[in-house]
Image 1 (cartoon, rainbow, N blue to C red):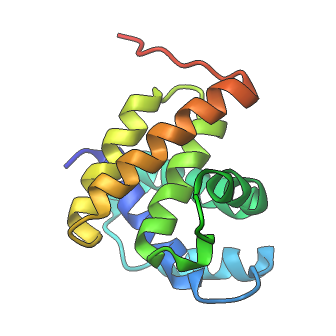
Image 2: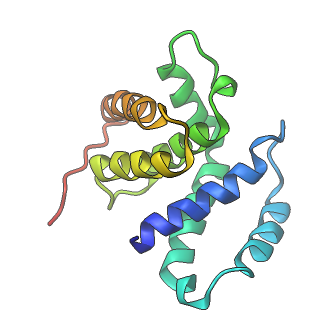
Length: 152
């Protein structure tokens, strides 16, 4: 498993912990919880993986309303609260990457989300997440003017 995939999985675990709360925790609580969260990990993961994961975590927390409004706008006859918590947070992570990580191609983000959903989601999660993210990719490109190309 690649370092960024592992970082995304840790991000999912951390976000899932707070998902049941009706209100977002304050910054101090998040910082404290992050410190405790990282104590259980290998120092080998620490540098780049931790930085990437924390950047994802803060992107989701700092922009959650905006991210959730993109998701809600894409769901037909559904509210975001009705989504399975794992699926909801996988989609949040992907939207954060769409909007705030210029160096990651949309298709890479979508593929990573699908692979993570195969591991943590329900049987139909990969297809659902693929459909939602493909639609959201088009919305983000159109509304935000964000275009990403694979850079090799």
